[in-house]
Image (cartoon, rainbow, N blue to C red; front, top):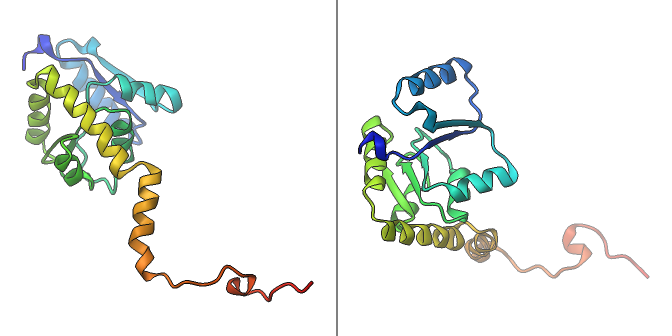
Length: 173
């Protein structure tokens, strides 16, 4: 990957460790084309959705994510995700070809970025469609609610919908 062909890098979100943020900014300043690194801080609302929608890819080389809500947000707008295997929805991402998954190491992250960089535009477009489908089939709230209902239905007992069922005596008229 040549430096001339690298896209701009947007680093979004808060950093709770000011010393770490200073180190990251200093490292970015030493890289050629340092003007291509944009530090946005926390993005919310339309700014966040717009940034995710305009991104070529969303990269999260995390050491641990219980779910990865930002990953789901990227998928929702059709942005492919490049994530580590420590994001707990990485198997679904790989299965649905909604992005790429690699180890949570410098080498793994480098492979993710190189692999993305080498993709032809037509394959990136298909991956974008797969990202949106992945979200709609797995994480969109109505689909998630149906899945939860289907999962717990066998364990529920049928109780008539009366005030007695709620532990209150029926109201007398």
